[in-house]
Image 1: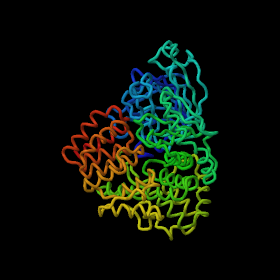
Image 2: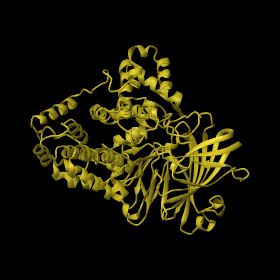
Image 3: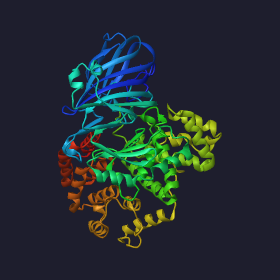
Image 4: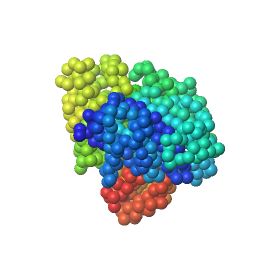
Length: 614
């Protein structure tokens, strides 16, 4: 067996899946999906075909032409990272039909009770499949090397509606015939009066981690010719605030097209999820998922949207072949995001973003000082859970590498190269060597001017990386230096500051300060109460490490009100690593009480932090 991906059982000698047809019955009472999956392979195959699954109960696997059972086995002891291997014995088939049910513990799914929603009357469910969680929704070759088209028939309560990373075809009544393969269901259950079917189709080939849906009591606002903003309709104020925050989305799409070529996905809709969503944003094509924490009231949250939009070219259109080459997704996307922001919001804002990223990259070097493998762009992840090593390195070191190439050849030449790169590899999954070969072929001699191997395979930050230079960046760093000497910034000096300026300032303060200084800073500028969570969490991290115990209540309140992993990782690490006995105890207590409100992926991340430091 020759693995194609360290996180998948997929064999490189087997044909890859090209299409999946799913029938899904969502049982909210049992937090379970009863389903069938019709997998189409690129060619007929004879032999043992390996699929990935996690916490899935398979009822039967059939030849869809004859409906005769196909011999199969499921590994008896799941791999702690990859899950269970499903082996199906084929004799010349190019399709297999799998009848199965998901588990309430499916790592991609978070089922929210009505009390966890705005409405307090209707349940909600959403997915998060990156990096390797699609396998908990349907058995598949769960690797970005296998790009799939798909269609879905989804049976949901009629009081709810569904959205997907796919084109919505129609909403209609269930049909008796559709239940025939879902052997756990009778047609009476499928066609009950309180059920409705939503149909979707995805016509462009995507990696499985971009499969996404959400079901709840959803409403929307139109914010552009290609963009709607969705959120729970009971949270009307969230919808209104999101529509204002993201009003500039169409302009961003237009600028993206000028920079990177045609937008290939037709629509660019946005879904603001409940607070438990574990990421800032997820670039699901046609339907970007966003945390409500990006709604800041000053349109600066549009930068997260710019990042997810940039993925429409770099990540979704060209994809890393597996997670060891994740920088190909995130480094290019961070670069593309900042190019869009530079045009739409100005060079100063783009430079601030680079500065915040530079600080974050240096912090990650400290985090991985005992495991330098994960300071490399191209790294080894055999036996490693990608969620455990998720960091800013592929984003910010990847950005620095892309920027280094631009600085070498000039922006005009680099823009031409970037458009050609995207056009050449669109709808393909590639590795680092493929990119480097293309780079050397199209910019002859570049390997003599930039040490490409050092950048992609070396540890740490190369000496020819770029710390940003601008008047505002230099001023903020200077003010942070003055704070170390006991001088607080004056109100005049911060009068024009928004969230990013404060974030950069706070991130450049010492890891810990005199408690009286921290309290005085907050008393003047109310940072612990900031509506911008980047600012709030940066300040609370400083307060914890500076032993300001008066902020423990605010830390607890924050950790119990949201599930974005960036903030959970920051605050739980601060409590568990730099805190004393009281802080460690507080971390355990908060997690015990808040655990069930977090997405399964976030639960795992916090558990690993606490087990490491406590």
